[in-house]
Length: 104
Image 1 (cartoon, rainbow, N blue to C red):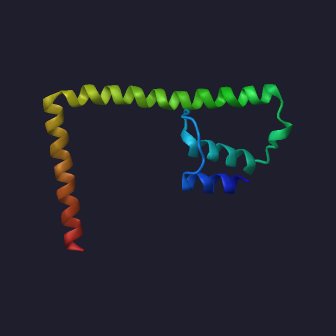
Image 2 (cartoon, one colour):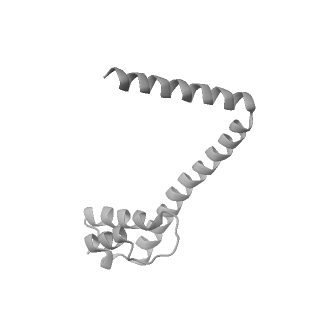
Image 3 (cartoon, rainbow, N blue to C red):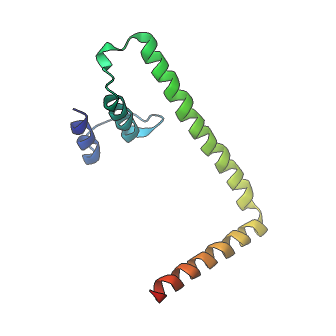
């Protein structure tokens, strides 16, 4: 069954609402539950609540970390000296990569 859902997601024929981890993330969670032989019909309310809390804490924590990192990056790139240094490093890395490709 999960294979068919994943195929429909790949084709874009499954309609879904926005959520914390996206439509492909839900499929991966379901596959992980199936891999560990979790029978979803035997789950009781406390089990479902525990699963929901775990997902919200883990996914919310990761997304919060991304938000804090993005805020710090925004402040970092607002500084002209830092932006110039990043541009120099990126240019140097591109030059080195081009030289490695050219010498192969």
